[in-house]
Length: 281
Ligand SMILES: [Zn+2]
Image 1: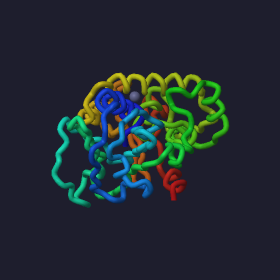
Image 2: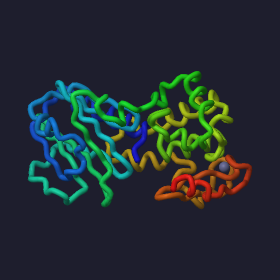
Image 3: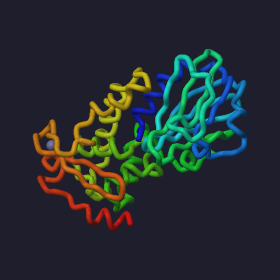
Image 4: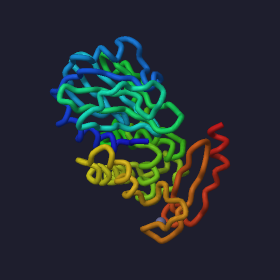
């Protein structure tokens, strides 16, 4: 799932290429992506793009009077076309879910791989009409130490769960929470209110900041591979921790998993996933 650094890379890439351009045509390849019915997507035709921004893990393309809020879910991403294909889009053939054609001849798709259709686009007069945006907590890069300290102090949940809770702090998902907790040398199962919040916040800024620097200015097609190259624990089960040489371990639950280094994070102890399984049922 694209998180804060990847969506920031998209914003930086798109802004100079699409702001000031006009929408000439819209295509839908997957009906379920559109979470709003009124106005229809065709309402964008003829409108000028006035801005591109990010809230949490969502990409927001602003037009004269409308905003398109895109949430990528786990397998969604943006495909950029210097010359957008003009042939008809066949419905339900995937991965293309939504396509915008621009007056310059360029364009972009919101696409989603796989059979689960969780990516979402909402066309609204104002982003606050989208619940995920209205309920978003402060951004992971702008939350201040006092606010973050209060957030952790008020929670007895696991720190991994808190970092991924978009209503508490927005922008971090499964991958960067693994990376942040590894750098902070904290167990993903540590109780939030026992964690040194200012120190963890420094680590959040450091990890997300490095990731952003590595991804900025990359074309969207290269972001995913570049993101993976930067990981030290996430998605690296069985490989060697670059910090301490221990073997990266994993806890699987529901339909996802977390990775951590027993040497750096849990005093050599293996975490059990049984409690996590129960919690998620
Ligand atoms: Zn380690």
